[in-house]
Length: 283
Image (cartoon, rainbow, N blue to C red; front, side):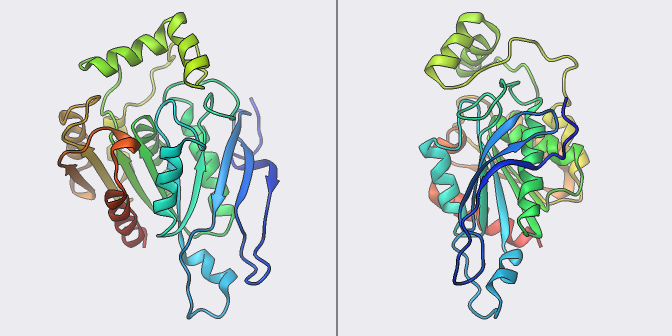
């Protein structure tokens, strides 16, 4: 167990913009509170404040979107890059690979310890000078942003959860039964490692982490947006409705007609609406 701060940069490639003094893109490894190295990328975004005389100061006024991808994703996957590309039109972007995914270290705990990964990324985003941080998660990442906001109140200025489960151990759809085989069986974990670039921890949760639905009431008063497709093949609509009910008046639910599951199903128009919602709600 490491006692270093959550967002410590283990290695960094910083490219300042010589004309404005603003940071350029950065790719680095962040060290989490439990010592895992997380592959992370910062993009300063495409938002320009032409009326502000000091561009380096105006950068702090832009929101930064911290993207938490779904299970088997990583920062280099095309669908994750597409999400980052759309959101960079509304602010800066931090994208990262969860533990056990892509170039990050460790092994996936399928939504449990991943809260530490997100916390390191949020801490880094704050350290880069952004006063407003929006966490945006998809599927597994959607559950992580909910739990993170409840366990670390005040660290996010707005939270967006897309295609997230409301409860653990759901096996009511064929895709979720396949996912449980992948996670719980030795042969499934081999498929994950060599076929999906995802290294999965062999141990069961102990203790079982706070479920997304249990976490949601603790997010208030931080603005919360829950997004779900009415054709989601993994989690039917009782999941987002359970989350929205737990959120009460501080949460907002968008049920998207014709949308399937997570990043692959979230088109650019939806991502643009999410960016606009977050830029306003984050203050």
